Image (cartoon, rainbow over all chains, first blue to last red; front, side):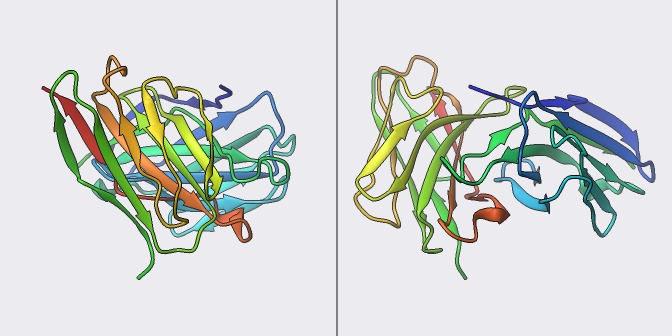
Length: 113
Length: 114
């Protein structure tokens, strides 16, 4: 099945550093979503993006919907230990088989205190 | 509070046995999904159901079965035909309207073959 290209696969950073990750696709999406998965838990929605070029923030998190509608990025500023987890991007097109998200393989973030 | 409940949290299966993972939601969501998660492989779709009494295979349906007799419930059976069932299993749901917020996920079931 179709998957998004998410990079990097993993990151090891020092507390206080900024983090950047991105997703690219060969297909256009109407919606981009970013999820965070804590160890041993299900993913939780962080940010949803609905328009090309849209830039949205949620606390220390900022995400953008690429102009071409084929990519998105997520930035985390001033990382803290609780940022540890796996971050997934997801693309969705409403209409047709709506609700079927396409996921990236995730970026595993480790933060050293 | 509304949400999705997966049970059990941990499940151990002997080789050759079928096991059933439970997924219940009280969000009044229409569609429900099952994903398998292995380290480094992301989320792979097993089965999904958009309405009661109907479901479709995902990318890795072989060795699994599901039912959708009630809107709230979407149990997944891992059969003995699934050769490598050890994994983390996630259930998710989404409404027909208001779906722009994506899926709500359960907290997962970790299945281990012993």
